[in-house]
Image 1 (cartoon, rainbow, N blue to C red):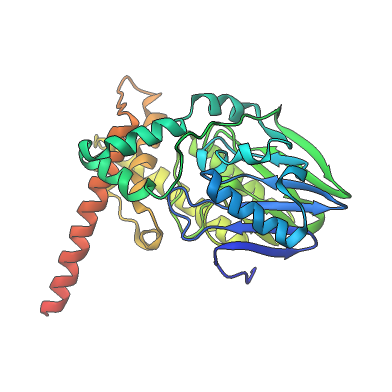
Image 2 (image 1 turned 90 degrees about the horizontal axis):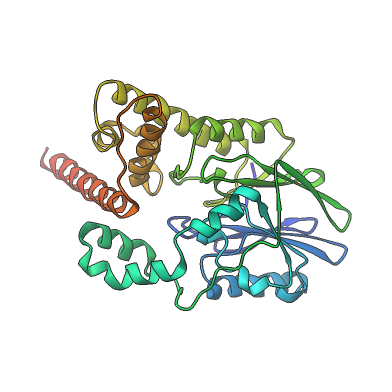
Length: 335
């Protein structure tokens, strides 16, 4: 097991390999990485805004001497803004994504849309409560998305100095295109949001079966150090835990779908057990909704709330479970 502590900032994994971590890994607080060799460099992901990305790039320069303008290659593991919206600070790099990621970046919620939602949040009820609680700490005003300059399908082999770096698109899973960045000689892999460690994964795209296959693929590799998209650096035990969660949600969702529950009833009915110790448990609302979308392909039924409705339902889930927790605590105190 890698013994790197989950502290904010740059972590030297060794032999020119780095991870940049942002505790506590919740909404928007993503990880990134840097691979260097022979004065060449590859950056894995940027962060949710330019100030955060600038702080990361300075830490990388202080450790390696490599300035942002000197970074040769940037790989965005997927389309979400917390892994791409800092791209503008490394415009000199060749920016590589999977074809599906590039297409999804054009369809994603834009930084300006996020700004507008924050401005209107007080008028949006529980959805606004969720937005203010989770997204107020980012600087998106005037931010423009910087798109990739190169795309690939399937797999792509790269070189960073003498290091071989292998890109593999394992999506659709978390998003429409999810890229793993594997450095075989160093036994290191950057997984993007295929892995959330000590935090609840969120299934934006699915199918879940693809995500489980992606976990199995990582487990098949010769890797010692695994840098997730969110959470602390891990090993294969962390991969197994994520796979177990996905399997569990898939099975439990199916039972409730077959019993005629709607997706929100099902989300509230599923007992999380040890998974309830992870951050962002409210993501079960989106995860069960995504499962139901998969199941609905087999039927004529359809439940299609928009993102604002899903944010509202996640906040309701949080509020309800907070009340349950408080009530349980008070009962214990009375005995």
